[in-house]
Image 1 (tube, rainbow, N blue to C red):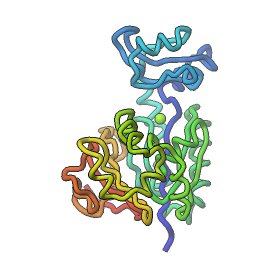
Image 2: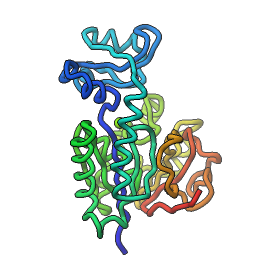
Image 3: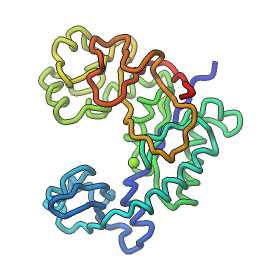
Image 4: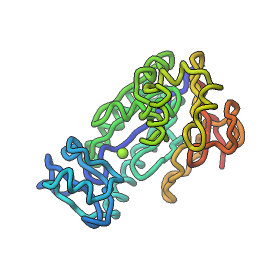
Length: 287
Ligand SMILES: [Mg+2]
């Protein structure tokens, strides 16, 4: 059986890249797309401003302290939506199985596209080249047999890169990464895990699941990695665009949502809709 091939394609610093594309004066400069200088938040930060510690969702006041020389531009949502439409039009030329996560990222199941277009890494490279040529924007891609790993791989590959993790290499790839690479692990959960001596995904994988469940309460964690078989539940961001392509939706959950075979918590403690993933292909529903 052909292994499932998932591409996670993610635009780089999307809003900021659109601004740099449309206004050449901004190219190579530290650009923040954001709202009010004191009350707003950072919507996007160009790669030139990130070395100063500026990240999206950060309060503008904090961002301006970190990078006082940054150029702040107000958002132009219509331009971002137009760019997004163009990107999704390109993505839809290689597979109908697309799961948009937001305006600027999506999962693509290209398992059945190989006969037509070649291997998933080749498909990803061609998609990124077309997006660069036709939309004028940089993007990154992660390729794996499950969405969860593809998502982390694109993050590692950024900016303007791609990374393929072969099915048998997923565990080794994840093992050395910090726990913060896991979806849903922010500073709070990181601190809880650090107290338990868990700093890498591999250390979580090696920990006894019962011990983990005893020590991680509340919203702390619902990931359940095992040494023998990487298993984690993850909660895809439920932000779907109304206008985004509505193909048969991809689900990693073999059963009803919020029902995690290895989870003692119901509903799942991660925020958002829950699916559980393991080293298994996604299933499809026509909803
Ligand atoms: Mg992005």
